[in-house]
Image (tube, rainbow, N blue to C red; front, side, top):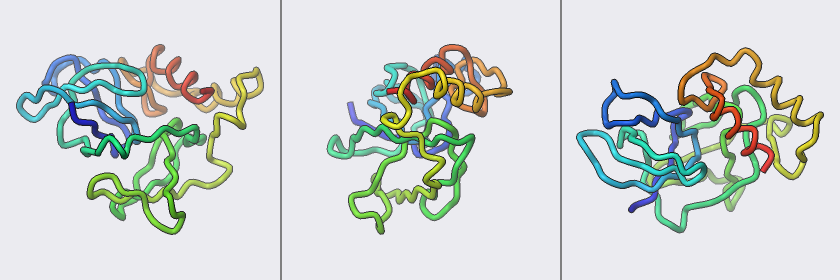
Length: 173
């Protein structure tokens, strides 16, 4: 299976390879998957972060080499923040992985895609700086206040109970 990365803010993961199929989860920007079977314009994936499996549109993923698989403890810690993908500004949701380039003046490169994180320092949620304690949990929970319920969702644009639990645990390491 070939690895790939999600470079869109939020991508639906479906039960079946159809746009009409139930959304079982979502991929957030920066999450890696292992690609499997392809059917029409969909590909079966397993998310390497949470092990959810389902179908996503193949065009919504960027293939990467095994050497490009990285982990991070830095995430967007504001409702949304700007990330530039191939020069286009995209608003990324709370909990989006932030990867640091080897050379700060250069963009990150995944395949032929160039990424520049334009995240303010106080909008970065670092696992080490936010130990799991009441005041930090309270701060995080309030950022999700009034997020609409969305079956299979795991972002501030729409979330369900398991998506909320995943994001809380992700942001506390």
